[in-house]
Length: 282
Image 1: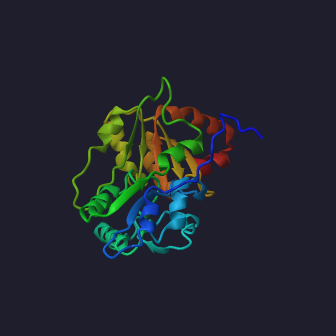
Image 2: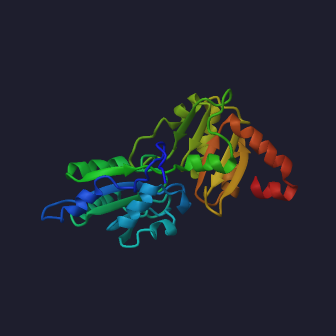
Image 3: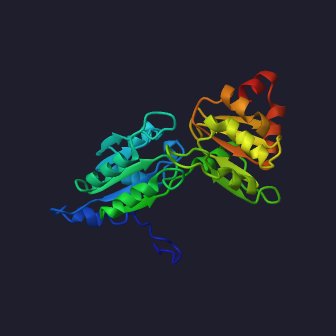
C-alpha cells in the first residue's frame, strides 16, 4: 500500500511538561505542577481534550461548585477537593485555596485546579498564579469555553454581527468585600453589546445604570440559565423590564446578554409561542 505524501501522521495528545515531572522520580524537595483548567460552561462533553487528559492523570483536583459532577468524575485516580466559589453561597477563602495549591504541589506531581468556564474570565486565577509563582511552583493555564459563548450558541445568535454589533464588553457588576466599586457600566455603555456575568442579583442596578448611560429602554436582553445543560432555559425581555423579569423568572445560574442583535431572535420566539408558552419563557 502506497502512503499518500499528503497524509498526516496522528500524534498522541501529550500534556506539556507532565512526562518530565513523572519521570523525575519525585526526588526529595521536587515540586509538582499546577494546572488551572477551564471546565467549560457546564456540559461535560464541552471539555477540551487537554483538560480531559489532565483530569485522567491528576493526583489531586480542587474543583469549583458549579463544575458538573460528571466532569469531576473523569479524575478517576485523583483525590478530589471541593472549594466552593459560587456566588451568594458559602465559599472557601481564596487565600486558603492558594495555600492548598502550593501545599499540594509539594506532595503531588499533577495538581489540577478545575474552574468553571474559562480560568481567566471573572475568576481569581491571577491570585492563584501569583501565589504559585511566589512559591516557585510551575503552573499552566488550560483554557475552557466561557459562559457567554455557550449562551450565544444556545440562542443561535452571534455576539458580534456585521452592521449591528461590532463590539462587545464582558463585564460583571459584582465586587469583592472591601473592594472599591468598578466602572463596569462605562465599558458596556461604550460597546454595541454586552455579556454580563453574575448579574441576575444586580438586575435592577444593571438596568438603571445602562439606561442612565444612554442605552435605550427597549434594548433587547437575553438571559440564558444553565447554558449547555439539559435544564437550560432561555428568556427574552427588554432593558427596562430586566429587574422585574429577573426577580420573577430566573432561578438558576444565568448570563445576561444585551444588544440589538438579539431582537430578531426574541421576535421569532414571541411569534412562535402560544400565550402560555410566552408566560413560561418570558
